[in-house]
Length: 209
Image (cartoon, rainbow, N blue to C red; front, side):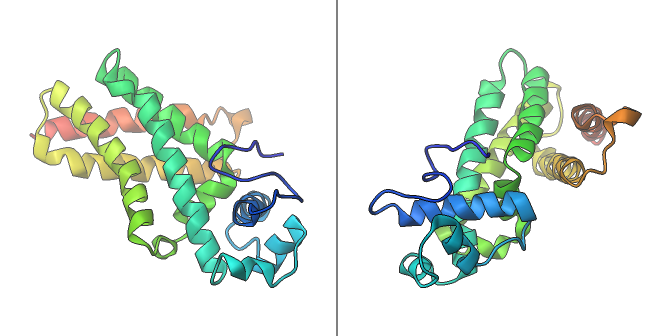
């Protein structure tokens, strides 16, 4: 059972009066975790909640609209987790950045439905409010990369490039882990892969100055 969070509604089958929207988002979240990005239709979400197939259209125009809301809430929670892990760079930027990387992978592992919805397609984030929330998550990573780079005497103009490189590495590591391609029996450790790769990218960025 996926743990509930205040941003999300009641669990499987059942919702309080007026809570249909939250219940549908929670159903989509669970279905995505179980079956992946293509793992649900509006009708299946309605069935999971226990309402008619027409009921979701009171709140969502179509499946993409529901996916967009799920992604928006996911990025909101994601940004909160990364910001908390960074903790304003305490006790030092490198240590805080490693902690942030672990929080990234932990989020993807704990919330596979949300993570899939968030990164399924940027087209799902079709409202300005949703895009702002998604950008906030990247800006948190960007600020952290700036803290690490500047503290080590790097070029501030290289921050965005480094942020995108680390994001690509973190996302690729998370997706490989979620898909089961990393084998712990062979010593594959997602956290170590991300940490070592991030350190290499930081050192490369410092040499670019």
